[in-house]
Length: 298
Image 1 (cartoon, rainbow, N blue to C red):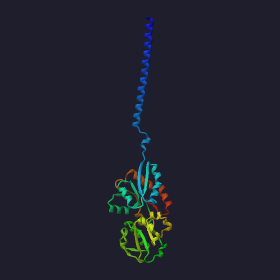
Image 2 (spheres, one colour):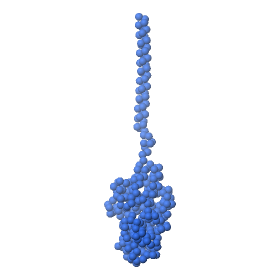
Image 3 (cartoon, helix red, strand yellow):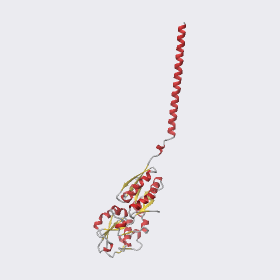
């Protein structure tokens, strides 16, 4: 009887020990799960700083020289502000506006305001000026002849054929006594507005990108600044005549950042324009292009 009672007492102690052990384990397990759940909730409520710093892409369509080169220098400036600048080069003056109009690209950098206005009117597009960056003096460059003093009857001069650039070329020829335009022709002048042509010069009208390619076929060529650079010309060293920096033409033809209407005040576009107008970029332009490209301070 005593042995039986002793056995029951030992069994009771063991059962109590097991219950206490299980109770302690369960309490710790519940506590751990609560802690884990609380941590997960805190993680969801307070996203990490890394998750909040997403890079925003800015896509720009640009002419190769100098526009794409200038943009390349601005890439690091924008990267510090959380923007990834992606630039695609175009050789023509049509597609950069079309891809911005369609929304495929955020902006373009290749044109001046008169060309933009003419393009919008002709094509029915809605591109606007988000900021002026630089201007490029138009120049008369040697072809088969190396001096304007050598002009003779029947010489040929190649000029861009788009409305605004052709007018600019003709005005430069007029400023240098080669032709005289009808009064009031101004920035809309065409070959039909030539009133006097004492040397019977033949004006060869070509798409802007083609003019630099016919240097060896014409007496002289009149080039946009970027195409002159692309052809290896320097305004300061090679131009026989060029628009002066304080001329009305130079101020009128400032090259801009073009965007679709409604996007000009977006934070990304403002950051792009600010980067391109920074002191760092202005210094780069002045040091690189030998007067062929001049920062616009307006």
